[in-house]
Length: 118
Image (cartoon, rainbow, N blue to C red):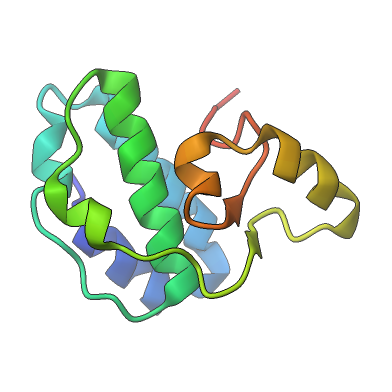
């Protein structure tokens, strides 16, 4: 299972396919019997937007799994400026409305179904 720290490294090394790595992590977290191992160790804070996105995602996945997020996630700050992950201007308003609380707290805006797979 990929850890959150490893995911951040994968994304840094392969920004073109960052969303593939990201969603693979989400799938692994949901499938793994003890997903706590994926989020046990903190990652280095180096990219405000991505750090906020990863921390918000990990907290949301913990909520979904009914487990307590590790304390270190609370220390990951909000994005320095609002981060609209979808990147499309016409989705900004709906992203502000739909974005789950864990994301909004860190000024990360996504659609309600962001962590869903079809």
